[in-house]
Length: 186
Ligand SMILES: C[S@@+](CC[C@H](N)C(=O)[O-])C[C@H]1O[C@@H](n2cnc3c(N)ncnc32)[C@H](O)[C@@H]1O
Image (cartoon, rainbow, N blue to C red):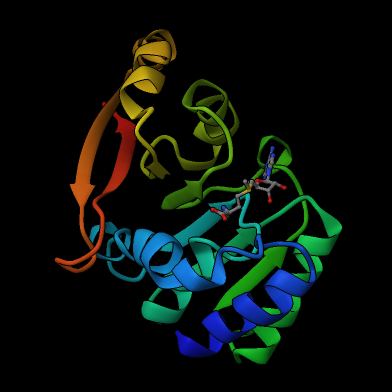
């Protein structure tokens, strides 16, 4: 993981993918927040990380869980190029695929769709439901607005027969709790 962190705080900041204040809190605010997903993803599944940006959470997941096949989806060219270089430098080519595009245009199925800071839940569900239904799940890292977003999504959740569960997870005892929203059929 430290090789990826070096890339994030170096090239990630240089390329403007990460703000200048982020390096000092890269572990507490970014890596450990994403690491909360590690214990809730099943064994050996195909994962799509939507709106991967600089690889959060997709690259954290791939590095920590070599059993998973991970696709990083990112529409913006500079971020896509960054991800391709990072995957190459970290030697993850056999495990991680980088695709340039938008979630709503993708026509593939995944066991797990992850995302962090991409869109509010109603929009996110509209984009990602076709990618994980009927037998997969969405695992979205969310902030304090999670309850409000769920309330705003009540219609779409009911209409599509989905169930939604909020999990509070700490990757390690000393870090802030991460709010993970799990959405599945039924
Ligand atoms: C705020 S950034 C978050 C990046 C990263 N997930 C993180 O937590 O640092 C949002 C990312 O979502 C991407 N994005 C926006 N709309 C998207 C869409 N429709 N499909 C896939 N990615 C999208 C943006 O290009 C951007 O990289």
